[in-house]
Length: 339
Image (cartoon, rainbow, N blue to C red; front, side, top):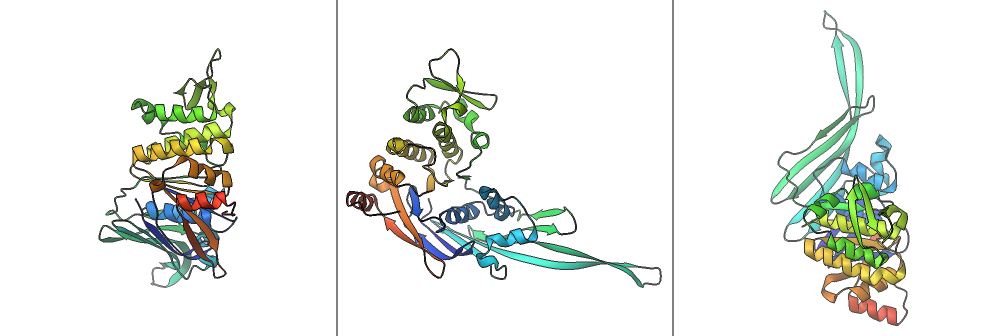
């Protein structure tokens, strides 16, 4: 599990240094303070071999263009002259830097006398990712040509990723998130999902996964698609499936409490914590919901939990304040605003 993260010049974050991570880590704070950017930074450092990731993370925000100006969106104040740097620390250090490059090459054609007859400029731009871990420094890059659709990916062949990492956003694609459900059922591990589903809907007797659809038994004449039961039920399936798919890795969840009634949050956190323990998964999640924080206190043990209040300072430093479970309990009892 990771202990800390450092971020330099990524999106709206000029600098951040956060330590004290545990198995379950919850980030909260005002809107636009940097919660989602923090998750995206961790995501990049967990999958740093893929040079498309700095562009793909824009898709988490429903923005999928990949023009030159879109590359700059990852850089602090759109300044591509200064590289991004993200460092994750545990028993080894994962150090990632992202640089922008732009170049114009010329393709010169000559006539029979050796004279130039044409000059065809080729404008290229892209990301260069330099990363190191395990005692090696490696380089990958992605190159775009502004005059055409050509895309070149060059991934360092020495890079072998050992961490499974998934990002579950507020507008997650349900069908994409449950692609691993087949493996859960084949390994007879569906019991944990069924128990979690009953937290939201106690009348569920069982479920089946057929032709990409999750069908639940409510005691009616036929099973019904889980989609008709609401966002909370679908998100439980997505959460538990994603944890299983990230075994020995990291799961990132933006706005984890979306779709859930406050009354189920304590039991939900217990189900999530149990699944993370069973699969050796470290969870990083964000919320702006006080009920999610209260549920965390009610549902989890002290040693599992780390909560961080995030605040963006005037110089765009992302400042974090660590809260143990005991700290949160005191804050809630005194009705001190912690969001």
